[in-house]
Length: 358
Image (tube, rainbow, N blue to C red; front, side, top):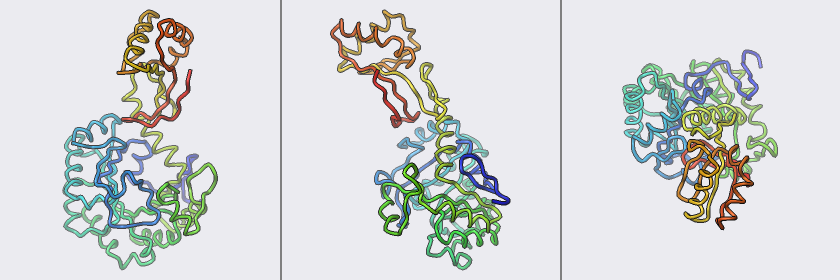
C-alpha cells in the first residue's frame, strides 16, 4: 500500500492520533462507563455480561468507586484513558466526572479519548472540552455512511474541532467504508477502521448477512481486511486495526505494563504479559498448613511463596525442583494436595491461560 506504513503485527496507517499512539504502547486504560446503548448495530461484539447493563469497568476490574479506577490506572502506569461502552454519553455526568478525576490526579498530559455513536449538540461538546477531553471518535451508523456531509455527525465533528478536541471517525471495515474515507479526507479528519470480528454475540447476525470466518484460527471476518485497505487508499489520515494487531500489540503491551507493576518476587512475567507461578492446593486448611510446614523444613525462602486460605502460591521453578520431595512428605503426613503451574492474566481474578499439573 503506497503511502502507508505496514508492520509485522498487521497495522496499516499513514496517520496515528495521540490516542492510537498510546494504544500502540499498551499505555491506555480502557474505561467502560456503561453497557447501555440506544443503537443495535448488528456487528456489536459486546458480551451479555456487559451489554444492556449499567456497569463500570476499568480494564477488567469492576469500578465501585473512584479508588478502584485510580488503582487500576496506577497498576498499569496508564498514560491515558479510552472511554467506551455501550454509549458513554448516555451517562454524561459520569463521563465528565471521570475526565475531571483522571486529569486532576494524573495531570493534563493524561490523554483521554472517547467513543460515541451519537452526534452530540454543541452544549455537550463544550462540557466535554471544558472537562479536558482530548480526542473524540464518532461512530455513525452504516446506513448513513454515504450521506455523512448532510448528517448531524458533520456538524458535531466541526464543532468538536473548533473546541480543540482532536476528532475522527472509527468504524468497522464493512462495505461502504470507502465512502466514509472520502468524507474524512474532505473534512480533514482521521479515520480508524477496525477489522470486523466474530464474537459470541454477533456471530449469528454476521452469518445471516453472509459473513464467514477468515480461517479456523482467527475471529476475523473474511474480506474485511481487503475492504479496509481499499478504503484507506481514499484517506489522508487513516489507520487500520487488524484482528492480529489488537491481540499482538494493544492487549499484549497493556498486560505487560500491568504485569510489571503487579508481579510478586516469585512470579515470572512472560513475553505475553502473563504471570506464571506454582500452586500447592490443599483439600482443606490442615493440608495447607502441613504443606507450609514442609516448605519451611525444605528451607524455601519466605519471599518465594505466599500463603493463601487453602493454597500456597510459589515460584514455579522451586515447585518443579521440589515436587517429588513435596509429594513424599505430604503422603507421609497423610495430607492431600494438588501441585500445578499456572499461567494467567495479571488482572484482578485474571483468566487462567494454562494450568499444568505436576
